[in-house]
Image (cartoon, rainbow, N blue to C red):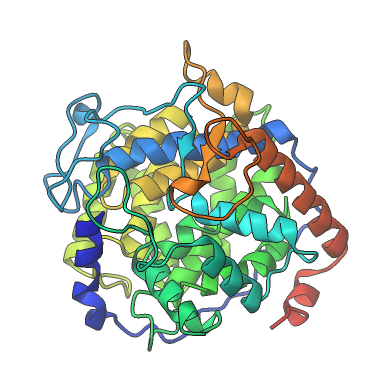
Length: 438
């Protein structure tokens, strides 16, 4: 991770024109919220996210150009990443699970959403203000100066990178969001950060992407600018619409349907919409729906080598290249949890992020019990260790490993959902946008 931080500043001056804020009308709001999900569904979100996050981490930044991984690499030894390192938790490219009694370690795909859930649960209004976000970040996130040295490490590590890192530095200087994503002071604002820290807001407004966007807008703009805002918004929309899926019917066609609805909320002129259309069209034209590698390779040629559709590849942490890669596992995975994780893990670039995104969403759709059936003979851990990466949170499980459980986290989500529904029921998308607090 220290090598990763050292590489992050190399292309900062190459950020292209990103000062604009890309705005589009939110997808049409439902007349009312969808049925409130049960605790077991929300537990599935955290379990699916954790399983996928730690599986995807095995190959994170292993392959950012050919030779890419293929299906033939599943179950084989892992290779070093672009910094010449292995991850410490596995040397095999395979599903990674923890048994009960060992808590899931926090990572940047889960700990920032945990932070936002905590802030929403502890403040009277779930619509967070700029001051609340800044104070929450400073209280719960280590700086580079006061972070501890991890076990086996040699340097302080605050487990924050790219735009998140720059945003925290700005907050410590007194800057409030959304100025923390101003490209004049945060040249990393087109990176992947907002995608992996804000999907949770969609689940907190079941069936109402307009309300979810209202909740998520300032957290997204804390670290994202330009098209990176729209990409994060796409994922928030999909998570909000997941509550409308009939889980008794095949999930694949329904998941693709809500992806098309989320695509409708993307500005047609922006590269995310064009990327979505390219990946979807390539998938649909492919007669072999097991051959996901051909679409991944086409993404590499079109966007990394040739810079089409207004996208210019800068780094393997870009929001754009990882958005395109995530769509490969979305379409070819066809809502199969294990297959989606396999493809996401092997696809390349920042592979833990797309896997965590779809793992959490599919875990929510399946629920904890059905998700556990995906791993016969195993009883996955249901506890969480937030203090691996963050600080000063309540210990909800004193005397036990970690500080929290997925059940308790799900119960807090339900309490927030109830408050969100009470505050926004009957409110139209237009009204919500006009009345958004500064």
